[in-house]
Length: 451
Image (tube, rainbow, N blue to C red):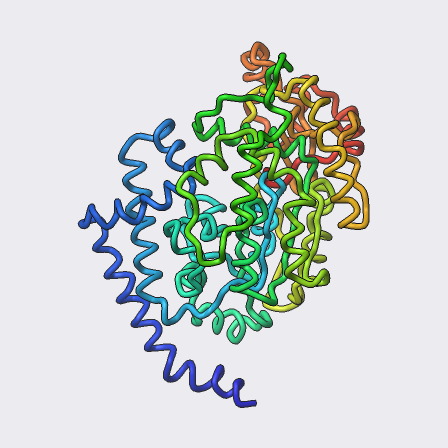
């Protein structure tokens, strides 16, 4: 009764006007950033250190003024959030912990359709900027990843909570952090436990062979310098199929890193450039173990990529039930999320490499199956990743798997494609029989989630 009076009477009459003025003043002050070059540089520097693929993307794909515009907007966002820290009282109730290229972005977008769920108070340019903080891999600096005060700065204000709970009637408001690196880095589990001891954890998993290749494509598309590739045939003394002792020791030292210790200066470079990191992260059972030892099993949910792609609405409803969100409240409606399947440009994993990786991950996958309590159809030729061979387009609620045309066929298809209005119309133009495509679609899952 008391809190009902506070939320419906005292807050609107007293606190709401003060909060609104406070937020407006903070935003105006943050707009001074474009005139202050040094603060912008100092704020962007740890971001580029923690997420080097962002720096690589700007250096290789965008002119300097695009990068300057992003850095300015990013610095303005950081300063505005710091200025309004007294209004930011929340740390996440829910973590989508991983794994990379397993659909975490798509799941976060689906969940944030409900007004009872908010992501980070980030930038609107990319879905990742509103769902993953990168706090625990040092986006605010390598010495800041234990600070609860700084972590609170990523999440919405009490005004957002009040609006969604009271005005929209969405139920108990929750915020999420969906950074897939949190599952990969062994020092993070203890820090999350200290921040949010009662949090609900979601692990999205996928055939590690497909996830590893998808990770390579993402890194190459952003311009990261890689001296390895899964697209090349196996050669004598191949180093792509084991974790060197030096790298294993490095990750073991990360496991022993104290909860208040600073992160190693070379950690991001190792994480984003080495094939050993891709292999290490894909040992899902071993990466999940630190969370199993710190959180009760009933607080952990596993979701498989193909099952999520096949039935996204059912999967989202199961997550709502797990985290305690009522889909009948707040005017929530399930809506298809625009999906991004990556840009492979005809690149495929070498068949011999795929076979070798299937063998490599056989035992690690068995350990994961024992934890989850079920097995997944990973590693078989019949279950090879449709995303490696096709792109997916959707017409209304229908998902159709469409093989990519050869480069030599693009000019021939161009005239036929013009004027078509749906993915189904596009099939004949690409030389695909609709009945064959529908039959194939029943056998394989359209990759309709963010990779």
